[in-house]
Image 1 (cartoon, one colour):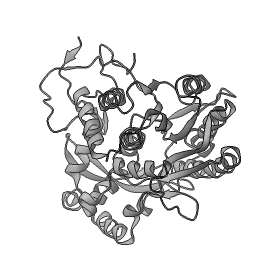
Image 2 (cartoon, rainbow, N blue to C red; image 1 turned 60 degrees about the horizontal axis):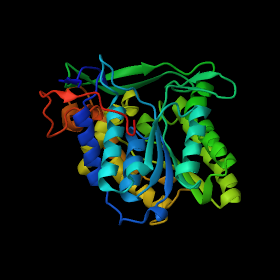
Image 3 (cartoon, rainbow, N blue to C red; image 1 turned 30 degrees about the horizontal axis):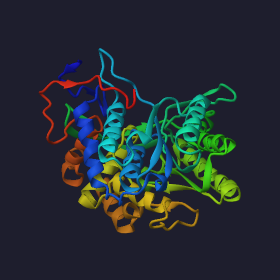
Length: 405
C-alpha cells in the first residue's frame, strides 16, 4: 500500500503531483456527460485507435468513443508511473479510471487496450499493428490523432526535434493571466521573443502531420485499414486575440502542416480503401497544453465570462465528432475540408464581447470581466484537485496499476 495525503503543490499552472481519486472523479463526470449509444454486438462495434488518449481532447475522444460509439481497440499515451517520491501523472490516473469505467459498463472491457509509450517511435507502431491484427480481426475503422509534445525523434534519421512557442516575424507583447499566492488573479503584459533559425522547422517536425502520416503508412502497409476507414487529427484555430502567438506563430505553422497532411492522406485513403482523412477544429478548453501558452489563460477566462454555460466542453464536442466518424450524424465542413466544432466560440458577437473585455482587463478589473474562479478550478481539476466530493485531507492510494498490468 502507498497511501498518503496528496497536496496540490505547484509552480504556476504546473502541478507537481496529481490526486488519484480526484482524477478518477473527473473522468467519471466526463463519462456521465456523454450521451450513451444503444448497446451493439461486439462484431458491430468499430475498432479504433486513439493516439494521445490521456489528456485534453484526446481523453475526451477516448471517453466519448467508448461511451457514445462503443469503440474497441487501442488507446496510446505517454505518462509517468507512480514512484515512492512522486505520484503518477494525472494522465496515468485518468487512464486507469477510463479503463475501469469501460469494464464496468461492459461496453469494451478487456477489448480496449491501453498502451503507455512513445507514439513517435516505430516500435510502438508495430506493437499496435500486431494487436489490431491478433485481437481485433485485422481491421481498423477509425484513428484519432491528438498529440501535443515538446519533442520528437525521427525514426528514420534519429534526429530529435524540439517544439517552441514563438511568434513569427518579430517579438510579440500580450496580456496574460497569472495567479499569485495560489488564487489571486493578476493581469500582466509579457513579451515573447521571435522565432529564429530553424524554430519553425523544428516545431513543424514535432507538432505537424509527419507522425500522423507515418502511423497511417505503417498500418496501411500491414493491410489493417478497413474499407471506409476514417482518420481525424484534432486541431485549434482560436481568436485573433491569440493569433500572433498561436495560429500565426510556430505552432500555427505546425497546425497548417497538419491540415495539409489531411489533404494528402485523404487522397491516398480514398483510392486505397474508399476512406477519408480530415482535421477537426475544436473550441477553446482548459488543458495542460493550453495553459502553457501566454494569453490563452486570459482569453479562455474572458470567453467563459461572456458565454457562461454556453462554453461547449470537450466531451460534448467529441461526442458530435464520433457521430460524424460513425456516420450517425455527419458534420458540415468548411471550405478547406475541416470539421468545425468551434463555431460557437468564433461567432462575431462573441468575439466582439471578448475583445472588449480583453481591452479593459487589468488586475483590478479582471474578476468582473472573466470567470477566474471557473478557470482556476479547471486548472486544478486537470490534476485531480478542487473536485467536488473528494476529501483531500484523507490518505489516498497512489500506487494505481496501469490497466491490464
